[in-house]
Figure 1 (cartoon, helix red, strand yellow):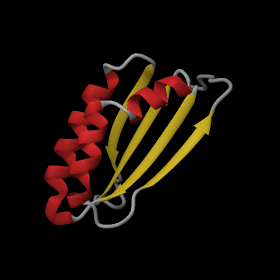
Figure 2 (tube, one colour):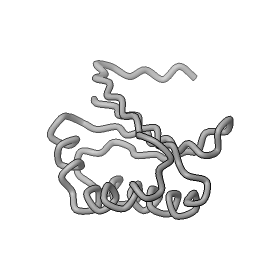
Figure 3 (spheres, helix red, strand yellow):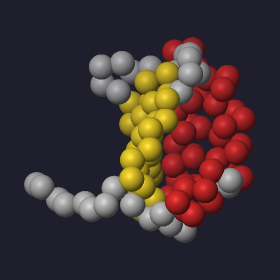
Length: 100
């Protein structure tokens, strides 16, 4: 499984637009083959940071997502809402265990 974690610093003046765009991205992304989960949150300590937590079955699913029309449209539009450079982290997970 591949887990991706994105942190998007949002310009407060464009916060509502950014939230709408990322919510739409999440809905479209969850419908993709190979996507296990795709969640969007705002940071409770810094409400101008949006976090995206993505889970994929494999690298093919990641590549398919990155090349999807809805992701490319999101990439083209979100730039106007950002207050800085986004950060994206990738984790390759061999196993998953529920602890609680």
